[in-house]
Length: 382
Image 1 (cartoon, helix red, strand yellow):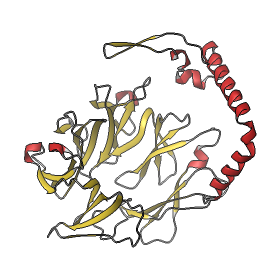
Image 2 (cartoon, one colour; image 1 turned 120 degrees about the vertical axis):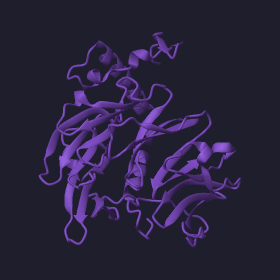
Image 3 (cartoon, one colour; image 1 turned 135 degrees about the horizontal axis):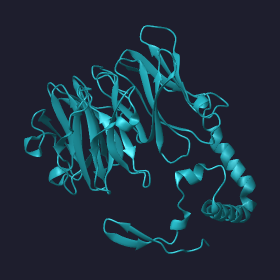
Image 4 (cartoon, helix red, strand yellow; image 1 turned 180 degrees about the vertical axis):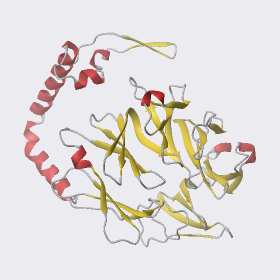
């Protein structure tokens, strides 16, 4: 049993007792070459627990090896994804036998050869663990932003790679959520900085290439500790979307990709029990929402200059027997992911005449969902 040492934790004006606070180690303690007294105590307890588990489970050793072997045989070591077209380039990833991590490729449309843009196996050299997040290419196709985590805390360092020279730029940002969202100029991006203690995704920052990270501008800070922040970009590429969310509420803010330094504008203020997400294409916002008691969600739209709920118009009503899970908008079509009697269904709706049909998968049971579709003008769905 771990030793109990009472410690008073203060949060939001409240106090609670944490008997195991002594086990919390800082990043400096975790990365130190020589453990201090606290780290040594924590390691001693972990090693004792591992020894105990090993002794109790010793008789299952051969079974564990058998199960591990069976599961591994089901995974192709030399696998690759289907390429997708984005801004004139096809992108895909590959895995190779004997390698632990993916290799990212891209191929210019109309050419025959793909080029490696990121080999995670190289980044992982010398590390026990490597995680990659948020690989995003700049609008001019020249720069790749990506986040790396070598500790397994989802605390990513943002790096920028010049895809022409293959070199990493000096811009290196620590303690982020791992994703950069590019502005139109391909020189500026927004990212989310994490609280160094709680690791809550809390603050949206703006960075300009070639400038010190210390000069990065705060675009938005989420002051409510029960909320966390995410970033995205609209289908139209016109807006950077800031989402503040917790279990029971959502609030979206918008920043123009052409002018990312401007103040973020609230789309619809947060209200307890209201969950929503938005997208934008062809001068219209689309809203997935549970407003008005729509437990299974409904789809609505509004003009660009009137985003408050009073201006929302219904596209797909709430239905008590159908769960609207998500949606994807295209220039001519709207694709919605609906769950009916436990099964996922994809419905294609013609935006011009509002006619629609469901994709027939020819099976009684199956799993279906919307994949990567970066090109809004396509007539093919992934």
